[in-house]
Amino acid sequence: MLGEVPVSGFDGEFAMTDKEFRRLMTLLGGLSERQRAALKEILERRPASEEAATVIDAAFSAHPCCGHCGSEASQRWGRANGLRRYRCKDCRRTYNALTGTPLAHLHRREVWLAYAQALADGISLRKAADRCGVDLTTSFRWRHRFLESARHDKAERVSGIVEMDETYFLESQKGRRRVCGREPRRRGGVASKRGISDEQVPVLIVRDRACATYDTILADRRFETFRRALLPIVARDAVMVSDGADRGAYRAFARRQGITHVPLHIKAGLRVRGPHHIQNVNAYTSGLKNWIRRFRGVATKYLETYLGWWRMIDRQRQRLTAHACLAATVGFANAAT
Image (cartoon, rainbow, N blue to C red; front, side, top):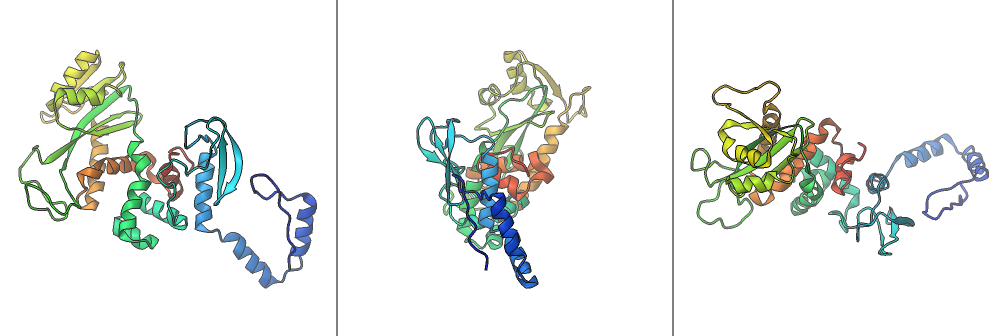
């Protein structure tokens, strides 16, 4: 039987000396083949809850900041519940990587990675619930908690050649028991009117050639609504490119801000003007629309969350693993995959 191996270190990590290591190796030499195989299995078997904690800690340790006051002045303060703790030098409170995040106080850490993989795969709520062994209502709550950070993670500035266009989603009260003014739709349904109407929810999508993407749900298509959406994000030296059918609001905004505007007349066959086109934003929009159809109608109340989900998928593509998705959930979008 192996003797107890002393451990040391303020943060609770193993800190074995050379003498202790040599003693351990001597003891291991007396194990039978069966015992060695059993020990190897134990060492290679890593609890899912521990793996989730390791992913979160590794991402957070690069730039730790206080979950209470946002200060970056901190010191390590041991470990608790599998996570490294810190103490803020400003507010003097302790915290860990989950403090102040959507996953704070969330239970069942052993299935977090499995649920993060479900988000990376873009599967339905019911399939995610079955995969992770949780209730359907839990799967619903988890989806929106896991995607809370992605919902707000959008470009703060676009520059260079900036493509912009609107897309439309059928207004939906999915999940509500009573819907005023019309019969409830089944599996998304279709609009009662053709073309753009008050049944459609407009979404503005702005994307530059570096793939920095910004989107927002518009209350209406008036100029002032476009101006409020575009003013904080479009750089003054940008070149705006849009479909000529929407040139009114875009042209007025560009003129007022002194920004170059290149309108294209897509319906007339003018799709490209030198380096200027909107194929980038159109491809992004097409991918978004095709992907979101799998959910058979998204409630307008949660549309922002799904837009953020697609931005996360588009940004990382094949690199969107369960580890990366979990790290992004607690606010570390640049975590290693």
